[in-house]
Amino acid sequence: MGKLVALVLLGVGLSLVGERFLEFRERSNASREVESIEPENCHLIEEIENGSEDIDILPSGLAFISSGLKYPGLPNFAPNEPGKIFLIDLNEQKPRVQALEISGGFDKELFNPHGISIFIDKDHTVYLYVVNHPHMKSTVEIFKFEEQQRSLVYLKTVKHELLKSPREVKVVATGFSSANGITISADQKYVYVADVTAKNIHVMEKHDNWDLTQLKVIHLGTLVDNLSVDPATGDILAGCHPNLMKLLLYNPDDPPGSEVLRIQNIMSEKPRVSTVYANNGSVLQGTSVASMYHGKILIGTVFHKTLYCEL
Ligand SMILES: *[C@@H]1O[C@H](CO)[C@@H](O)[C@H](O)[C@H]1NC(C)=O
Ligand SMILES: *[C@@H]1O[C@H](CO)[C@@H](O)[C@H](O)[C@H]1NC(C)=O
Ligand SMILES: *[C@@H]1O[C@H](CO)[C@@H](O)[C@H](O)[C@H]1NC(C)=O
Ligand SMILES: CC(=O)N[C@H]1CO[C@H](CO)[C@@H](O)[C@@H]1O
Ligand SMILES: [Ca+2]
Ligand SMILES: [Ca+2]
Image (cartoon, rainbow, N blue to C red):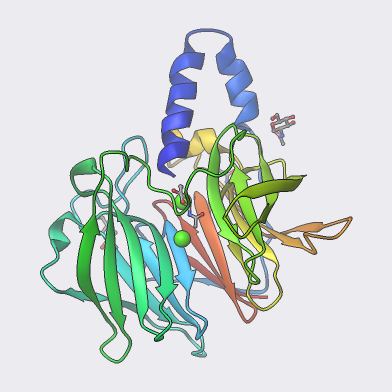
């Protein structure tokens, strides 16, 4: 979201000067009306209502959710509360939610979690990498997940001057107007990159040395934030901002909407793009990510609530 916001704010700043404003309004689909689409079994997760910017799910169905992001230019309902990582067990009939305890001398008061990524070591140890913005700086925190205790043990902080908007990969591809979400196929052969303002997804082939060559571009017509892959089917879920401008110029009476798209058979001649969820903001505002486990979907937002759905 960081890069996206910076880019859009820059865009707004520049474009306010002249008629580019109109063009930007158009590009960001500021006035797009969103028609509701909702699977039958959806409910809000009561315990997480101040953001769920990123979600990552273990192969066992335990989902990590980062909550409480504070970022310049983005709305936030709980500016004085530290961020948290929540855990949800998607194997449960009615999944419960718990905030993970953090031990190991970590400064929890300054915790401002953004993107998260699970890393599973060869010895099956689970690590959680968390992009953190203490005092609006950018660091990456590395935690070890203790499944029995349901807690995170702080291991170390990675800091670097170049780490302004940390990404999970080295620079291997260029030519995006605003690359944001990135994810890799289950077989590790393809990399999918979301280009927010170009409203598309680039499908790249990953070579052994991590060079990428572009295979195709899939146009979605909506501003794509984060991508995830359903490990069971290989489908891609995209958390999208149908009217990005409303997210940045937040007005509770005319809130930003939410949209989740699913791309099936992405490598085929005709990938199928369908809308899994769409809402005008009356239920869910500012979707940033959706992740799937055995037909169950968690839909996260930049600063708002969190929705659980069964397909
Ligand atoms: C969204 O923006 C594009 C320009 O990027 C425009 O062509 C399209 O009509 C807009 N869609 C809606 C629904 O406003
Ligand atoms: C969300 O933030 C509001 C405002 O600070 C607070 O009252 C509420 O308890 C928070 N909700 C959760 C679930 O943390
Ligand atoms: C959103 O849709 C609901 C019906 O689903 C409607 O009652 C409400 O007025 C709409 N809100 C906005 C801001 O358009
Ligand atoms: C995994 C992934 O694609 N994460 C991205 C989600 O979006 C933020 C920006 O909003 C990026 O910084 C992350 O890399
Ligand atoms: Ca994001
Ligand atoms: Ca992530």
